[in-house]
Length: 143
Image (cartoon, rainbow, N blue to C red; front, top):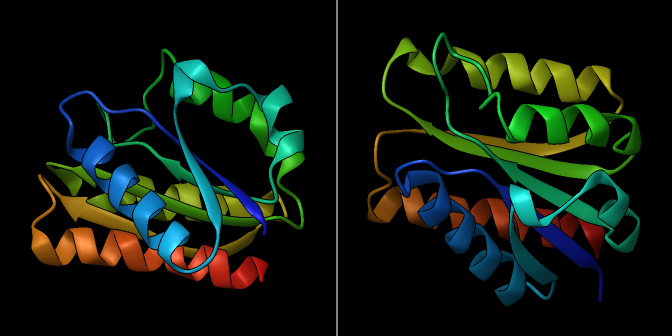
């Protein structure tokens, strides 16, 4: 069984709900997914996992959260080349531009981007199902 780390930052709970749904989807598809708040996971921990789902909402001027998530992700980037990765997060304005920039960034890092999901505001039932499907896609990419 392939190990998946779902690493996220959430300010208001939207991205956390997305992360939990992604974990459920990955586990139901046969993966071994574990949920981590970004402050409980480090780039050094990545060696113990086969794939990653990273979650962060859009902040400020459509950027990743700058105090905790961005510093973590800068350290994680050199470790994702050739690795299956999925991205997710919520936004309240800006149309999801931060996600398009983040997708480009991980592709430039050489990651195998299996999918991304940007949800406006709180995820509804369909949004949570889409998050579960993202987790399932990563588990299947690792099979």
